[in-house]
Length: 473
Image (cartoon, rainbow, N blue to C red; front, side, top):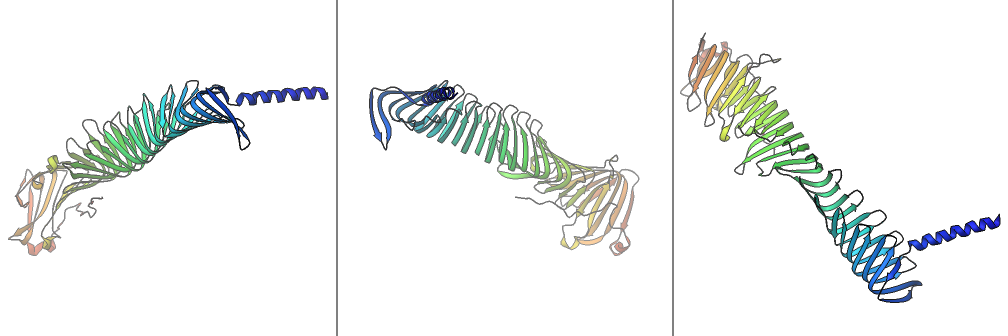
């Protein structure tokens, strides 16, 4: 029994010794070879056509120092390391046999069938098929290119983890960030810190972002900004999804759009949610506390659409529009602003709408002495025409009513109260009413100044809004 145990032990020890010998780095060739002992370690100096091997790892160089007991080799000059389809090239390296690791200095290049990787220095782990490279790193593949300060590359999965001044170029986008995790086979790129994604028509900036190359889709969050290549449209928000192939973007939370013409900011839109449709015709759908500003045109509503090509806006859900001293309200408002000038406004009553209201126009007096006097117009539908941004003509359809104050030589002189089926109001160059025409069933009443206390000075639905939006930088 004791003898059997002894035989088994000898076999195990012999196998362990054989396995250990197999893990040792073996010198295969050298033109010159010398041996010595340094600090109690056996050391060999090899020069000229040096070749080492460890399993399927083959090493070639001009000269080397082999620390036999430590299973470590210092390699110098024209260093080449091969493992199956891998090639590792450098001018100086240390190869650690116990964990099959090569530490390369003085410039290093890694080549395999999937990519070529270069850097100032780096480490390659042969058992893990992993490269950790640093300094002016670049990895190139027919489908992508990555540059960075540091990069970890996993050969089996083709995943790359880059840090510092990272740029990833693919067929669909150029992505820059402080840090990027690039999953080649999954077609996903995760970017963190000072992110920018440049595609055919837009540039996206954010704190973090994920890019899906196959779908040409990007999802971003944190200080998001998207701008067109010509920088004529800039949109900001807290989160965003961008579909480059469909030319569609949705942004959420504190969204702001700014349109620039000739280097000047001309259009501002603020809202909670914005959908951008950048195909022709190009338009933007907004929801939630919507505010639209263009020069002297200000508006607020619950939902709006901005048509860039038509230079017009459609406003619903309690819309209100201000143009200088005018205020317009109704169920829906559509305004045309070609060439940066207000041309016309259409205020509509939608009878089918719950809580529908009359269309209403209020005009404040510019004279500070008459600030409390408001000319008013109401009806089902009101169309306002402008010339050089000044009111020129108003067309009121159905249930038309009007109150306007009369002045004589800049002195108050009563009011006119007019109503009828349809009403047409004409204005002079000073935006003062010149003529009112009622198409059918006209009724009119003049109340002199000294009798204003007995008259009703407002029409049903009169309401002065105090929430005119302001530009937000």
